[in-house]
Length: 152
Image (cartoon, rainbow, N blue to C red; front, side, top):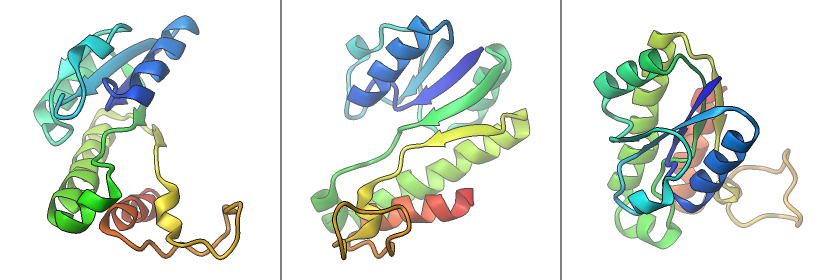
């Protein structure tokens, strides 16, 4: 079974690819390499592209008969999101919509989305519970919450 890992050249993505390969799955790593390195991709095929590129995604889903996606690709720095909010909303929300549209077109229905505790803002209690109010205090957290709402 082939599983696409977006952001698969990152720290968490590369470890996820390794684990999936050890469990008998075929990880297919997609990453634009803007913040990570090709050398981190050691498990499964690697496709260097942005998740906004629907033509490449369409080909990947078809060529590898992809069953599922684990979606790690995102801009993820809270402070940077405050100074460059447009970049965060574009990459984290708009590009995720492109990924979701490509998945739908290919009939890929399974996704694991890597969200963030930043969706909760300053928590009213710790540990943060799943049913705690989500009130992000920065564009990064807001962009992740928007994608959570889209997925619902």
